[in-house]
View 1 (cartoon, helix red, strand yellow):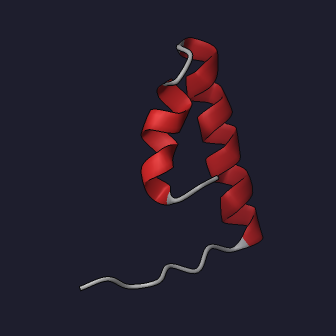
View 2 (view 1 turned 90 degrees about the vertical axis):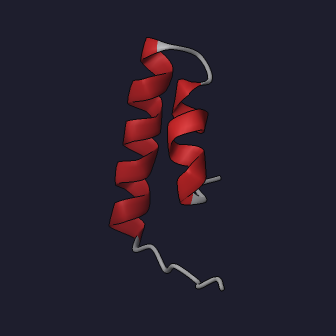
Length: 40
């Protein structure tokens, strides 16, 4: 079973900020951690 998740623009901005923070620590870590959220 799957469901669709709708993400508000302000949440997308938070995800992008978190991804950038992880990427600063280690290359590829941001995509690894935030990729599961469906963020491009």
